[in-house]
Amino acid sequence: MPPATVVRRIGWSLAGALLLLPAIAMQFSTEVNWGPGDFLAAAALLGATGAALEIIAALPRRQWRRRGTLLALAVLLVIWAELAVGIVGPG
Image (spheres, helix red, strand yellow):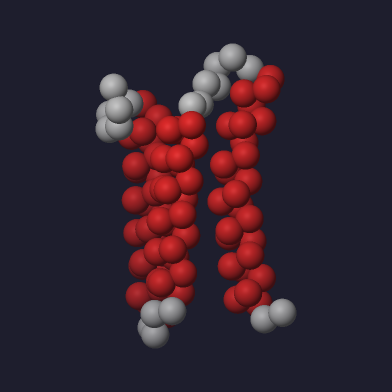
């Protein structure tokens, strides 16, 4: 397999693993309490970020790819943090 394919598989596997972590944590702790909407929002956020990174990887110039990747990851972290503390989102 070409190295790019391996990196893509690792990236998508990491996104899936991030979705599994709260489900596993809910089995051992009452402090983690995600509902179906939480998992749907996380899946949409990780999926959109993954799709953005796929598009960014196709950019012709290396400098654009680097900046685009940093921007996409920064947006992911900011939105995730805001959802975690309840700044945006339902109720």
